[in-house]
Image (cartoon, rainbow, N blue to C red):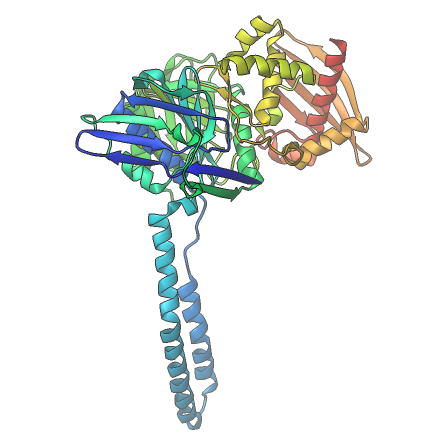
Length: 549
């Protein structure tokens, strides 16, 4: 999927003895979005932006050791060992020695000729990583200006970590020019280095540069255009975030020292075997406990009390990604942890006063957000007609940010209808769910509409489910209405075989539990999203319920 950007110059930081000017170059292909103010919370902003940078460069994918030199040596020795083996008689030794000397001379000459090439190649990649890291990044961060805050979003290189830095207007002073909207910003490694020079005694200006949107009479050389070809998984990962945030979560708050102790334990120990997980032991009105596997070491956080209603044990993997939060420890007031379940994503929110930093982690490091974390499949999916969806989106657009309850009251629509309508736009990259404030925000991920024909089905299971419903292969059984949920029995005819399904959906149209007797569900349960038979049953029931209404 190709994205086109146009920037006026580069983002940069100019600093002298008394002041610092920080300027971000926005994408001029989008609607004018700019913001000019002076920073008030300087050091916290510097540390929070540094944590966001850690998300951008994070790559926890397994990197095998480079054994190319050893293999080359092994290959070169093979002929030597073979020659020694066949040199059984002393009369062949003289001939063997002569051939070996000639072979060594040829290889020595080969190494001499190729050495400059390999040296230059290594220097090039080292230089590229240190001085032009833009080439290693896939997507520039996204920045949004809203009536109550300015926030940045980014994805890690391995697509397993999501970062969002929200800055309320208390972070700034002397706000002058501003225009609400979303844009991409030009970002580089050099810009990060300049952030480190921010000091409290210097007055610092923060601006998303508005000058590029003015009528230009200068030469076009001032503008630079970029074309980035992104994999669908990167774009779909952004679309999955909001859906994952809307799911039911087990939440508790950690004191900063407790977060420090988690990182200290990980820093002092090295995993040599599996499992490499954090096991949270949660009991109502008791301190949060964390068991570090495989070492069997347990920490009890007496400053952090779990206030949930039921006892739970939840395990998460990919824990070393938590070091992204390390620079926030001295300035954070608290860390709110939201767990979706064992082996499922987690969200870590750092309260920085006027700022809030959200780190979203997929189930484990090798699990990117879009490949196996299909959480839009478990979001509210009540049938909403196009006219109602547009009405809800237009109402949100007028205020830029609003809660579903407020929209429900203002428009006279049920809250599940509001959330399902906004969920449709979230899947199109046009709406973001703000977990820290329980609100929905207008956030256009791209200047042009995303090709939803490519992104309509996030995987083969969803496409199959749609085909089952269209072919009338789904049969609904008994439906048990309970106080806070509804239990649905059903069956799906798939390739001449009938699969039995059971779903539990709460009053807000969220999938709480489900079972199926197919192979996929037997292997994965709901950890990788529902199977196509569960999906088809849900769609069939939702459409029937919509027609009854």
